[in-house]
Image (tube, rainbow, N blue to C red):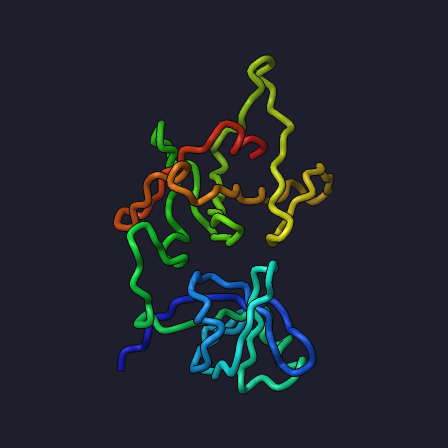
Length: 218
């Protein structure tokens, strides 16, 4: 029998309360994935094994971008904490019908990023964040030059903070470390047609037309 392919629809980010509920950060725009009772599957952090669980109930946390879910097999906080960073899965056969211009998160991650005007390849899509309009998290290649000040040709000192409710928020303040330079944070690009006019899944790329200043500080 052929092993099923899986769609990652969310990530467990913590325990909620004492009765085994977990908080899930969604990678899906279909809330029924987290609200409708029935079978689900999880893959624990640092494991390739897939476990079947039964979703008993779920609810959203207004303003948090999170869902709280109870699995039948998880009965206390200790069990819930052991699921930290596990991914929530559904079979690929449950892929919903999409409207024109809609995409699965799993289809976008890993796409090359190309500047619409110059056709220069500048990075890779590494994640999607839900924050009003969806945001593409783009990891720039090291060879991409930082913007320069037109009057001095010196590198700018501008930084761009992540939204406050997203993982990996930057304070925008420089830091010093004896361990060498840290890996830059990804650039967050609004996933709207005016800024991302081309999505080509077949050839594996998106084109972006960033407004002035969006890439400053990277």
